[in-house]
Amino acid sequence: AQSVSQHNHHVILSEAASLELGCNYSYGGTVNLFWYVQYPGQHLQLLLKYFSGDPLVKGIKGFEAEFIKSKFSFNLRKPSVQWSDTAEYFCAVYGNNRLAFGKGNQVVVIP
Amino acid sequence: DAGITQSPRHKVTETGTPVTLRCHQTENHRYMYWYRQDPGHGLRLIHYSYGVKDTDKGEVSDGYSVSRSKTEDFLLTLESATSSQTSVYFCAISERVVDGYTFGSGTRLTVV
Picture 1 (cartoon, rainbow over the protein chains, first blue to last red):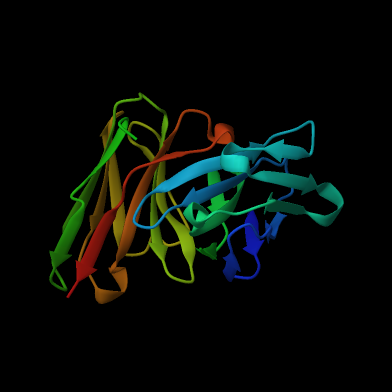
Picture 2: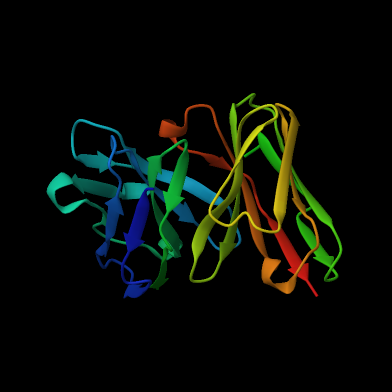
C-alpha cells in the first residue's frame, strides 16, 4: 500500500520568509502526487499535482513543488510567504483507487 | 464546492447511538470517499465507493458502514457511536482519481 511521510509538523515563520515542506512517499506503481491546503475552518483544496513530465510543478498562490524520483520526494516551496498562507498542508500519493495522505504540516505565518 | 455537500455540518450524539452522515454530489462522479481527520493523524480513509452499490474498506473501517444506492449519495453510518469516533468527517469525490479529489466542507461529530 502507498504511504506518505511529512516532516516538521509545526512550522512558524515570519512574512516574506521562504517556506519548504518535505514529503516522502512510498508506492511501487506509477507515481501521482498532490499537495492540498486546508485554511482554518475550511476543507482541503488542491494546491498542485504531479503526474509526469517536468518535475518542477507550479501551483496556485505562488506555490511550487519538485519531484525527485531518486529521493522519493515531492517537496513544497514558496519563496516568500504571506500571513494568508497560515494553514495546514497535506501531501498525498495516488494508488489503488485512492489517495493516501500524510499527517500534515501546520504552518503559522506571523505578520 | 457547490458540487458536493455534507450534512449535517455539526452533530452531538450520545455514546451507543447510531449516527448517519450524508454526502451528496451533483457532479455525477464515479468515486466517493469518507475520511476522518484527527490532530496528529492527518486524514485516514474509512470507506470508499467506486460505483452504485460498490464499496470497499479503508484503513479505519471498524465501527463504520456505508451505503451507496444512488450515484449522488454516499452515506456513512456509525453503528454504535463511541467517544473515539469524535472527529471531523470529510467526504470527497472524484471522476478520475489520478486527477485528485474535491472535498466537502466536513461534518464535525462529537460523541459524548
